[in-house]
Figure 1 (cartoon, rainbow, N blue to C red):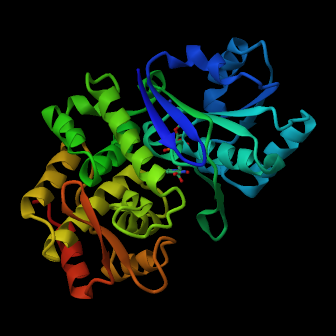
Figure 2 (cartoon, rainbow, N blue to C red):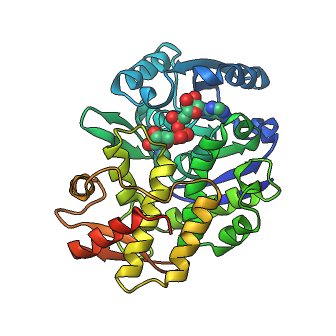
Length: 359
Ligand SMILES: NC(=O)c1ccc[n+]([C@@H]2O[C@H](COP(=O)([O-])OP(=O)(O)OC[C@H]3O[C@@H](n4cnc5c(N)ncnc54)[C@H](O)[C@@H]3O)[C@@H](O)[C@H]2O)c1
């Protein structure tokens, strides 16, 4: 078991390991009522959890699966359930599910009575290393993904790796893209461990799985602790977590959100590694290290399904863009991210053209 501390609006811990939910009582002191928010796929786990904490009154709020949970209508449904149960400031929301569930539940907690406590139990690798840690919560609207939300930190995040055993390899590997990102932007030891067994790394039962997951969470905890609200705007700020995401988001949009987020981020990291190299900032060997690790764990490293102009338009409307200027987190070395603002379009096209090649 590994415990990571996050220093946000308040200090909280992220626990990673197997069979860690047996200690959940630790987080219930002073709590009079619990609402467990979960999708249908987690119904049995939610019921088991409620039995385990039967000293405290609890309700279950079942929400739609995946992105279908992140709507204003589901938010209102949750508020209604809390209202009916007479949910007060002494009560606790527990989320069990993937990143969509923790995003929704976090926003429910942020908004009910202007803020009640929330504890996340992420059940996917992406949820553990990204969505449930860092305090970003929210829902989608007709205008786009994650446009409405709040920064609202949980009281704890419990990452029980037993959940990961039921993820498909593709879904688990999709989550690994964010782990690999953390290796490139901050913690080379993640890359070293992955390189020691790129095939074994594709399973949550791998001998180093807990270590790479915990290390990735530590990277996010450190970055978020330094810049919770993404105000620094320098190479030290939260924006570095966006490595690979500007192009990755454009791919997701171009593919009408049918691609796994991690696959899009993998291609996005390849794009921006190429861009960093072409801009004279990154050694070619590190670009090759990207392609070796990403493809080695089974993530895509090529993309040529769209004209560059389409992707450029999609990048320009990315919510992370500032005004009309495109901004990329580029890499100057392992663990040395920086910002490249408004690069020459010839450079962008050259980086894109390289994505069509597999070498
Ligand atoms: N808040 C943040 O900082 C942040 C960061 C990254 C991603 N996100 C959000 O996270 C969401 C994506 O997260 P996700 O990939 O976890 O998606 P998800 O919550 O949509 O879950 C994906 C699917 O996996 C299923 N599932 C969940 N746990 C499972 C398990 N243990 N075994 C088998 N199936 C399981 C779910 O029922 C769902 O069908 C997006 O909404 C994204 O916007 C948020």
